Image: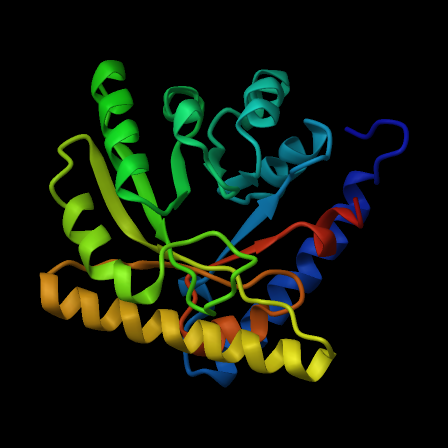
Length: 241
């Protein structure tokens, strides 16, 4: 379906095909199977049709930045899109934990012990186990949310004690630089940092931490080279917001 002021499905599918090809090429260069990297469609600020497009194309999930927007949009999708996994990828305030736990299938932006406590309590009240990722500020960017690299072991240790949370892995967002070259260097360093942290924590705590959510439209290639299992793409799929 298409609606006024929004791109047609055929154009979306063409863009998704191009992205899948780009992901496959990046995986081949990194000697990884393309099946290891999921394309998460970022539907924030776009209409519910954006999620319908993702489901129709065969993508498994969509990402939203704000709890309220996801809550309002999810009931509007077509019945055929009901199997989509809805992920919260934006910063989550603890006072919205219950709503987030209720309306999202996974929270990628868990960055504090306080938030872990709130989400665990909310999931318990809902009678569910809530999958989460720990957001790590692996680029040491003061403008980004996420736990510091040094705080990650303690945060993971606390997360593993929460009976109503399931820790799937880690997430990060790379800093921007003053030039394209600086931005690229920041991205590469950030993604390598997160991969090294994941490997260290997995070894120390005996957990798999399979998911590495890192890489967006502009930096998915270095993210895949560093081990990303999920790239979060909005602009290249739906256009600028």
